[in-house]
Image (tube, rainbow, N blue to C red; front, side, top):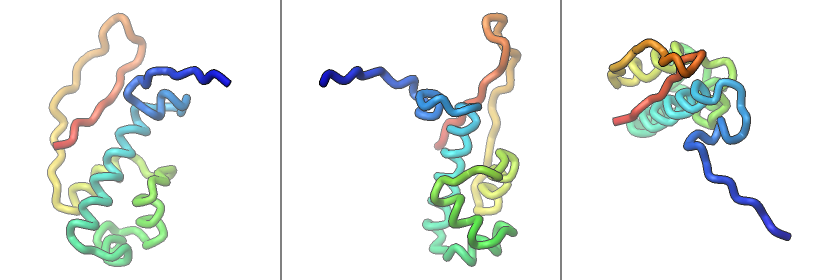
Amino acid sequence: MRRRIRKSSGNVFADLGVKAPEEALVKARLAHVIADAINGRGLTQVEAAALLGIDQPKISRLVRGQLAGFTLDRLFRFVTLLGSDIEITVVEPVRKTRRAGHMTIALA
């Protein structure tokens, strides 16, 4: 059987047809930052939950990438509560060739 290989767009969520793929990718990257910060500080899920003001099952979902119910605003807040700064560097008008804007995140 011959398989067809398709080059990735660079966003697995777009490749899979996920609704709002750019937002999904940003959320996934933020969740990774959060999980790394929790691990880096040696926090248990219970300790992380107390620090972030949520319950332990939500921490478990977050570190496993189950991000339904987590807004970007909430994830940004978690990142700052765990001791990292967030700097949004560019907000610019959409070019005439596109109808909607897009978002990306660059991690240091």
